[in-house]
Amino acid sequence: MTTPSSPEPPARAPSVSHSITVRLEVPAGGSAVGQLTSTVEAAGGLVTALDVASSATDVLRIDLTAATSDTDHADAIVEALVAMGDVTVKKVSDRTFLMHLGGVIETATKHPLRNRDDLSMIYTPGVARISQAIAKDPEDARRLTIKRNSVAVVTDGSAVLGLGNIGPYAALPVMEGKAALFKAFADIDAWPLCLDTQDTEEIITAVAAIAPGFAGINLEDIAAPRCFEIEARLRERLDIPVFHDDQHGTAIVVLAALENALRVVRKELATARIVLVGAGAAGTAVLKTLVHAGAADVVVCDVDGVIHAGRPGLDPSLRWTAEHTNAAGLTGSLRDVLPGADVFIGVSAPNLIGAADVAAMADDAIVFALANPDPEIDPALARQHAAVVATGRSDYPNQINNVLAFPGIFRGLLDAQSRGIDMDVLVAAADAIASTVSPDELGPNYIIPSVFHPEVHELVATAVRDVVERSRA
Image (cartoon, rainbow, N blue to C red; front, side, top):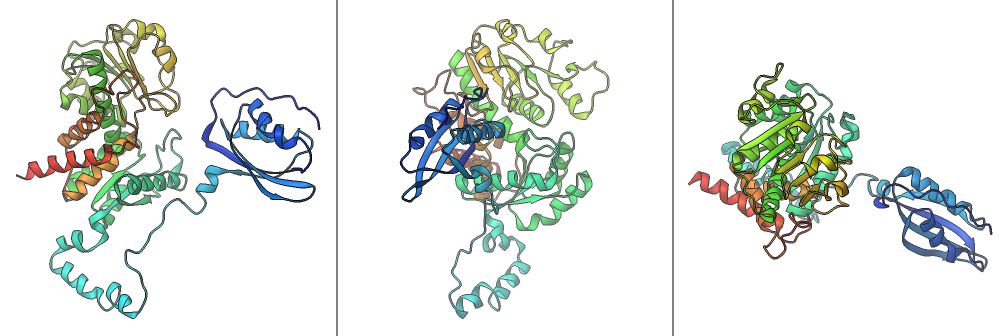
């Protein structure tokens, strides 16, 4: 057996999202089994399982599972295994692709269909009586059908994750995953609906047409500025909550994290000087939520620099921003306005600022660098000068993750049979998320709970339900 030279270790750490299972055959009496793990680790991978699938007199069949950093790294690891000499690679499986074979969700009946009696009540002729009852009182649809616990997850595929405009077919796995999260964290039946149009009027018409079957609409991965009009007009038209998660889910979790970060550094939202970079869907929603919650000193920047009332060519969304921020009328670039700021919030693009920019901020600065997968500043650099740092990534502390918000929000809205959603609901959800971090737990590296926190989704649901019910009183 030869000793292969190891490939260059990858720049990024291995991740389960790029894990592979390699089926190998090795001589039963040789030393290859003992060297499999060291070969993978020398190539920068991480072995998570090594199972003997079958054994014969002269051959062992082994399933080796390893985490890699990306597809190219996985290929390099397989090549290193082949180069061992006494190893035969029979099959390589990408575990993430295997998980998505046939999709990640399914429907199920709530009652067994065992005999003719069951059939006659679930379907004809008994179901006709249910239809007649709903025809007399359409509100009974919330009580007698899946509408009671159903949310439509709607996209046009125009702004999917960090992938951009990849279209409705490529967006479907993401929407399936979103539906799975609804079920896992809030026991809500969510349905992925990927529309083969990016026309504003057609999207509004399509969503309105399917609305009778749902108690809520979750808009997802629709590009700005189209998403603003779609959400606003659907809210006017429909009698169920319409929520654009890319906007408001992000805004809620940012507010929750900021509330706790300010507690860590003993500053107040009302007096903190905030610089926000990014004026798209997420940035605009973050801004409006912060302002509603009491932020008074905010300056917003986009690709063209500081947004101010005198800047030409402002669209309606940017005009609102100019009218509600930057009272001092500052102009220039992000680097011109960042010195002295208490808080930096980025929902924009990678590598916009450096360590020197953070050093120029106020003492005990807070940096939320949320661009994914590469943030506005390397978190390690930001930590050299900032008191609290958060990102959108799972491999650093303080991950700003929308999953903390939308399951509990919709659970509360559906339980209260809400007809809509307003800013008070968003702030209540943020407060509930923030409250799950106890004073004893709160610190620079723990300002926001995990999505697997045992209470967070229930606390959010309760807070939302209480706000809706109080508004009716």
